[in-house]
Length: 210
Image 1 (cartoon, rainbow, N blue to C red):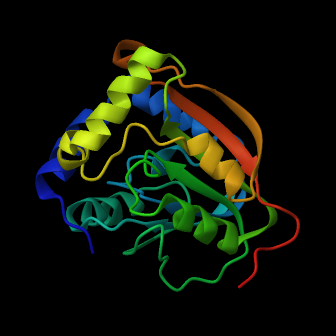
Image 2: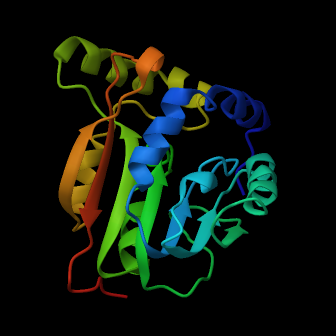
């Protein structure tokens, strides 16, 4: 399992603002049935799941954050099972989930295509992928800085593997998902030149090959 103890503790402090909470509410609005969340962090998003969710399997690789998520699961409004594992290699779980959630995680996985293939594999045909991610800017100056920070290795080292220049929307489409809605996340005082988006995409009706 991946361990980033310093980043994990800083992330717990940095992700507690109102803007982040509003983005999580937006991300999870209307989900229902059985769900899977990858990169669940410290579990502070659990409280935003609506009562229409019958079960949530939360996967988190970082030991400190996973322990915090286990504590948070006891107070969640829906049944939550917290497991260790990565998005690229999910722990053994019964598939056919109604929805999957990726929140600020597709930037940091080692293999984005493999992670999305795993999410497609465990979703039922037509199941929903909800995502809250930062993406590559459309403006050349900001995009150039994003690419430079990734190439330098500086940002991935500081951000526990985070990459600023990944074209995540294109990767979601390439994995076979059909994007239904995507809009800019409202982060208030956290507004940055790096764009953040919230969206949903549907898994194909024909399931992925095993």
